[in-house]
Length: 293
Image 1 (cartoon, helix red, strand yellow):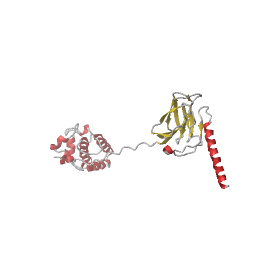
Image 2 (cartoon, rainbow, N blue to C red):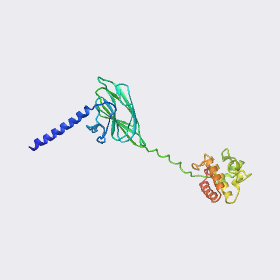
Image 3 (cartoon, rainbow, N blue to C red):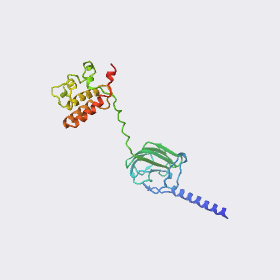
Image 4 (cartoon, rainbow, N blue to C red):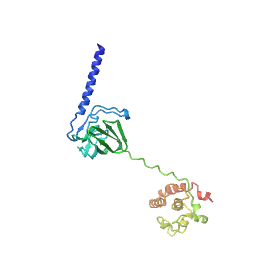
């Protein structure tokens, strides 16, 4: 008795499944149709679960389904058959719109192309095409899919996206590890290592704010004392270090050094001493030009 009861239950379950399939196969299409409440599942390649709800491809139609990005907009075009929706939005998650239908007597072929513009800060990730006459087709990457339709074929396109994250910024350039001191740059035998447009006779005031009227870069390099004078000589050394392609001074440019000096000079103390200390540390990291001599 128990075995007959189990067989009866299984038979009823089988009839219910067939009835569900029949209901999908007889779905009436009168225009763009949105259906909701689908079973959520993850497909696994050729072994994908094929549910008997509205995800199931309906013969003679193309369904576009928004897998997980509400508010995405779509455009569709076709080379044959009946295009039911050329531009539409799927507002919800796990909703579909029927966009193409084979007219009576249609045998095909026709090509149907659908393109998505993701919403909500997302970016195209993958498209999974389920066809009634084939396994799941994975189209990873693009936001456009094209399928070839015949009168008997049904297709569901599932568009999946992921939140948009801008690429990380490039890593900062490695910090410099070299620097030549004011004492190196002021020596006459090293004048050949100065880089144009800077020369020993270049007026300091033609490059920087005129903190030392009438003095050349070389004269500022050679002056003693602290305060603004110390900043002046380390600033000229930093300028020449950044201009030289033979000194690994870091990412700073001559324009950076000029801007830093002018800002500190305008601000006064303690900015003058702070910048002098910073440049002195950088200028005293070891001079490759001296090692090459």
